[in-house]
Length: 259
Image (cartoon, rainbow, N blue to C red; front, top):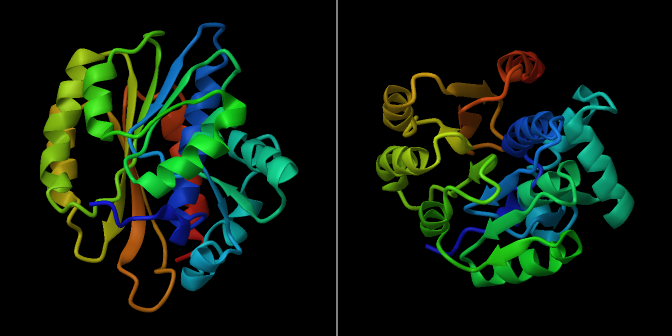
């Protein structure tokens, strides 16, 4: 399905959760003087305006990053990325995960970004030109299965589907197991929404059975508006970086302030 556009949701609390963890992992990985590859299966457009018509229609950024920005110290890698994007694109800009990654990684670290939606892909290619990202309009799952293990072999794959396709909850555990078999050393991170009817639970149970040493980090927050079904956000990370569990505990404490 190609109807999903993240511009309606950019900068919401789920983005705060996802991007804070993403930035922390990548900053930790760049501490070693070794090259790494960054890949995304569902990249979106990479850069958003939280005051445009789509964002204003939902108001999710106002209930997300506008509240959470003060949680992060100036030297936190997520805050550093936000500050760089604001310097380049203005105070109303919000980075998607490709742009967060680009501002944390080194110029020598390759970025492979996949987006199937034609309109979103056009924006992605234009927004990521300054960062020399390799952008492909193709199915992200196919990319991950065909491109793993990448070169350089050390690296991270972010899987961030819209979950518009309801069978994703059923097929994701097996697909990730296949990717992990092909690329046992890669950091593989899956983002998923926590909805009021909790369709993620069978998926996360299967993921935990398949990857008992992975880190599953979840946070909860109030719905962005009346009737909104998303009340939390999850990140399932295979081969988590040292210290990520402690970072997750700190982040959980920040989200508890909202409840």
